[in-house]
Image (cartoon, rainbow, N blue to C red):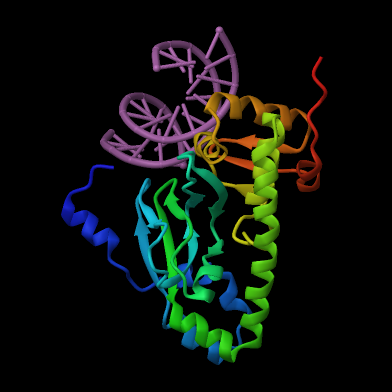
Length: 242
DNA sequence: TCATTAAATTGTT
DNA sequence: AACAATTTAATGA
């Protein structure tokens, strides 16, 4: 990315969301009309260039954040220096609720794998919604519950030896219907981005994807992946090697 | 709208 | 990492 400082400043300035962007925020839909209108008024969006960090480990959490458009990667700095990727965050993913809830600093880094649009509401607004909206509480509770399961899955993925299994499970996480409702049957992701997410070479990921395609679990498309059998990806086991 | 060309992405080695 | 093949996006008649 070679943008002039002026262009960068313009990109980094938070702005009001467009109607389309507001429509892409899943939790707004569960709110009653009056609550929703008040919440919408607090939403700001920001354009993030590929490679930029959305939040840094240790920084104070000022907003509850979500992906309107694009793809982010959530990872942690481990003491041994090897970064561990927790999750890929596609369109419709909202995150940092645990941190915002406890008013703590971020415990991970989030960076953009491609140019993305990220939305946020201030922590104060987040707590107001928790205090006054049952619907919002339900949404956040479900979100926390699902994310717990995803973190546990991420640890299992990290231990897996088979590349095909790792890719299959990672894709499942990205296609998670509750955490990532913005993702339809087709996930817009480059194989290069997926490789960076699972920490493998693009070649190896390409190879694994083709195995999974041959198994009729997914279909490769230019610039994306179509899932044919989500449950099959979830339970995929590598063929025993000779 | 269509044809041509450039750029991006995938598939192979 | 390099390269060829394929798909999409951009351009201009």
